[in-house]
Amino acid sequence: MSIKIKIEHFLETFPSRFVNIFTNNKFVLSLFTLVALLISIIFVDIFILPKTTINDSVVEIKKLLEHSRETNTYKTIGYKCKTSKGYVFYITRIDFRTKQTNEVELEHTLLLHNVIALKSNNKDYSDKLFSNTIDELKYFYLFILTSLIVNIIIIYFNIFIKRNSLWNLIGFNFLLIVIWLVIENSLKFQTPLFKF
Image 1: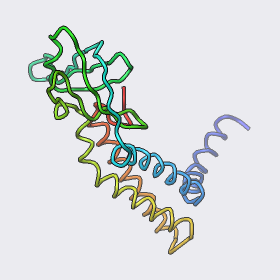
Image 2: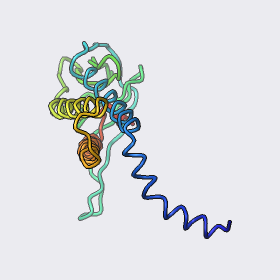
Image 3: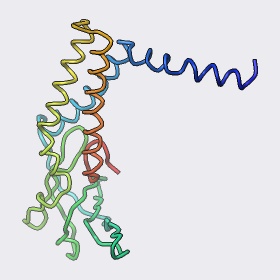
């Protein structure tokens, strides 16, 4: 069989293979369960589990620059700080950087070690942290989790599932997941999923 015939055969059968993958309830069920588990771990870590407070010192500070197309220059939008114990946090403004000692008090989550509060020299910098925008996602996390759990139950027990209904469930949940990933990516700075 020549390569041309193999390619033509693949292109003819690809749409049906693609549809079969996503209409396979086990695949969709495992994918939704995996995403629901990931989101629930992040949600529980940020909003339910207790937080840990430690004393640490900042050992490295890097500027976060954003390119402006109009003026073709870079402006400082924040700072990436690394501590001696390996914690990384992103902050919009730093006043403690010019001091001789960079001692800070960090409050972080238990599982993902996401820094959620910062104090230095009895000044609270928590509102300057980029990670504090995560609180605004609490209800979105709950909405995605509820939607995924309801759809997992519907698919698992084959409740009202027709082919069109399954595609609607898959499309809606993938849309929610894509919106969640875009929000996480737009926050960029120290969200649980996109630490860098």
